[in-house]
Image 1 (cartoon, rainbow, N blue to C red):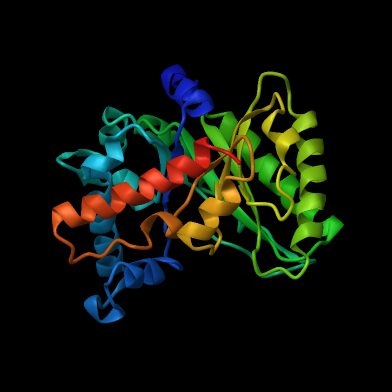
Image 2: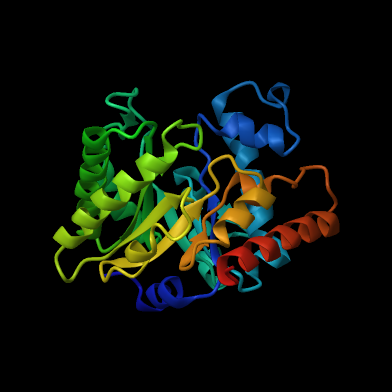
Length: 297
């Protein structure tokens, strides 16, 4: 079963979750934002080594362990790696940060207004490995592009089917059906998603809970009933392409939602900063995102 101390921190802690799970498709953009161009690596192994160095520097920075970061979502390679001579999940928990693992393998092409997750035939083996490494939970992303009732229903059904498989391993799943900020039907898609999530949560057995990672809704407070649902351990928000300022402004309008930002957390960090400047920049971002997660308007 999930670590009870970690569970308590995730359910009740005042802070946010850092998303450090950039995968193959998003890694070049993340490295470019960090000031490392594609000419700095010649193959995928070198690319992933550079992103691992970036993540190492973030999670070992003094400000990352200041109590405001409740958890961190890791890419599989980062889970398997070391930082400061220790396995990354071990180091994170020593710093008071609950480790999660990204488990999805990317998206299928758009169909019926959504992109569901690709098959995950090795999920059981990955979950077993994650448990052995001290991982608390998982995260899996799918995308909603249009306000299609049938598409959104299929998206949510897939997410909860996989979530139940993950719960069977004693892990806490973060269900992430992301409504694209580029959707011309965002508000309508939000509303349909709220209804489908409610149905799926109502259908969960009493002894099961999930976390949800959702796009910040167009209508503030739309997910209040989801936040309060007894089958929900926590609702976190993705930044989804918003700048740090915009993401924090929108998040602060939604009571009960805390951040799980990636780009909006890392946007001002650069690899050539000295350690003091790097940590100061990270600390300022952490403070701003923490404020938006805990002080609502």
